[in-house]
Image 1 (cartoon, rainbow, N blue to C red):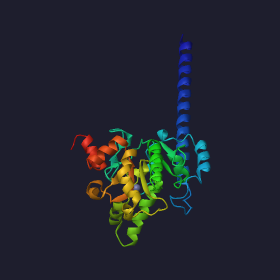
Image 2: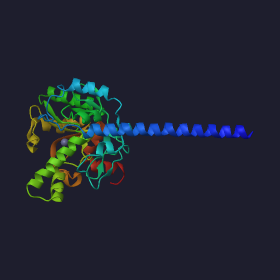
Image 3: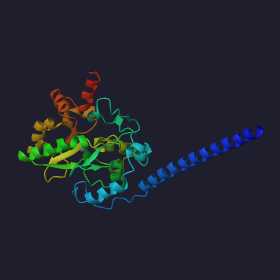
Image 4: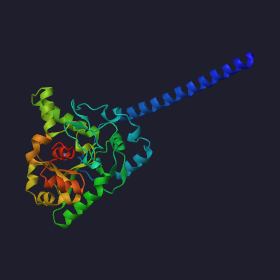
Amino acid sequence: MQNSKSKNKKLNSTVILSALCITAALIFTVISIQIAKKNKIDTLPEQTSSQNADSSPSESLSESSSEKTSSSTSTQSSQPRASFYNNVKYRSPVAKPADIFKHGRNLMLLNKEWELPEDFKWDLVYWSNGQSVDALSLNYKQYDQVFAVDRAAYRPLKDMFAAADKAGVPLQMVSPYRSIQKQDRLFTESVNYYKNQGFSESEAIKKANYSRTFTGTSEHNTGFGFDILEEGNWTLTEGFENTAQFKWLMKNAENYGFILRYQKDKTDITGIMYEPWHFRYVGVDDAKKINSMHMCLEEYIAYLDGKV
Ligand SMILES: [Zn+2]
């Protein structure tokens, strides 16, 4: 009796010990994988290409596609918040995680108050051919020159561009999805520009934040915001509002689900300067409602929330 009891005890301790070993091994493996992933991001070479976001998306497509298959395990769902905010230099000190499901993905509100939540899952496709693309694999290789857009906006965008062609006002996609890393580089460049002009760090950040948004608060980080100009033009200036393309977009973009996001008379609400080139996909019904009520997205969300 005693003997079998002690045998059982021994057996139990062995089982417990084995379970502990297996758990420890699992934890070690998970940590190793996370460290390996982090190192992969940390050790990325800076983008050496002098290409702008305007280079042909198809150029790097095949290489990028093969990259995708080789790193197919790195989906956002297994990434903690740190995976995309960890190395960000300038992050909003006040923005809260946006509730992207409140009124549906198409109506997610990002601005100075709301930033991309840590559990955000991108659903990107290549602008060139609609093939799926992993946002993080774009980050790894810094393939910012490969254009990507959210899946929901892809077909409407293609249709709108085709219709504009047909109407004799061909459009140019200048800047769609922008990786977190790229947004941070752009913001940092802006801050440095103002610092070089003699502004203090805090003044420089404030100035940078007028034309650039903090990383994670830009619609470009989602794949739902697009800078669009007339074909052949890559330079974003207010002069775009005088083009036939702009006039056509003002009349027709809503039919494809797009709104002009940063309107001239709404800068005090959006907190962003007038941008005649920045269009946001919200879906046809909401785009038409927003325009008919002469609202910006902030006002429309407040209206949907019953606050107006
Ligand atoms: Zn933009």
